[in-house]
Length: 296
Image (tube, rainbow, N blue to C red):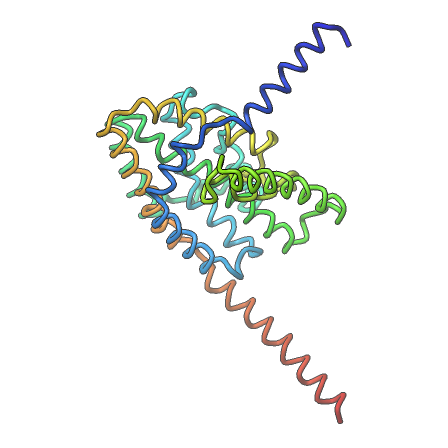
């Protein structure tokens, strides 16, 4: 390798380290604290609604369909300086729908009322100030790169789509553990508050992309993408006056309020949960019967 190539490689490595390690989290902490209550409420609803239904394809794809229009809106209304193209998901969503519903899925597709209401609100926000629209895209893409990764991996495992060997999975987990240990050490020495986002283990990234699983798949490293989006956030939020900062926080809270209404429209959850419970009941009953016969 030439000296020039070595310098370039060292520069790229430094950029990658900076991408992950040196993002100021002060504004992220402020926003997270301001949205914590509504964020937790959304988490409770999602966990309750999808606890047993994750592996059901109809539920999964209807969930994607419910949020599809929102990501498409961000990608057609925000400039690249606020939403870089490597985050775009619209085409990936559509390929997933082609896979599950067939290429003519648009014929019967209708925007559901809760989503239409959401879009109308986004239209007003976009007309008011594109930076307030960024409040929505920031939360939504971070969600796709955090909870979206965990939900997809759980679904893949349940559907036997996760084809990594145990050793590969363990290697991924070791890397996540290392990041968690680093964050814990920083929390212990006072350089990082324990409630910071960085103090929590990074969810394992979905690193494979079977057919129909593109919406949550990012070829780039998630930690690098998150760092990039946080930098966009920092660069603008830090320059806001008090009024714009208050408006940004309020719209960030509205993201979760409106998302709750969209989650409630996802179809097939009760049917899937009842089927899972019925199968579990049959399994338990068969064990009880088998034990009784064995004791006779």
